[in-house]
Length: 193
Image (cartoon, rainbow, N blue to C red; front, side, top):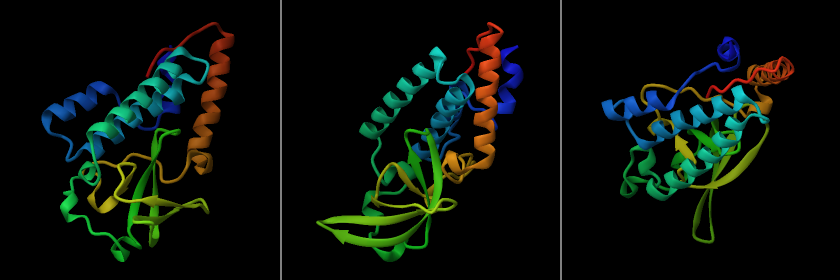
């Protein structure tokens, strides 16, 4: 019964079994693609179960542990299949599309590199998000930023703007809240990830 609304709330299902099978079969070109799918598993679990469910809390903790471990093991720009010795700093990246990981959302958002500066020995790049009028400066290379040119080769399934600004995601979040309330009132309890 709990799965009846899963496809309404979760537009792009993903599970750790599928991730593991793809890793074993060589279905990923680089660590970035694995991270995207794992983040999607956690995002879906959070979306479906809601903040009052025990699985929500477990998924948040597991996502934090995964991200911490990933950053210890995987370094930029190798995360996207590029050797560090081949990374070129500077204006060459201005105008290029990127995906930026937002750990609090467990999602990747598309943006564009709109500027470059070198400050205190660091290479900083201005990132402009596609839908919202927001920019930030990021040091590159960085495992939380992927040049789309070097990113996913077979799938791209993350939203293109922060969820609060994405109408379909907001609608799904609203429907999820209503379903969680109705389910709680009926005494039910879903436990799907």
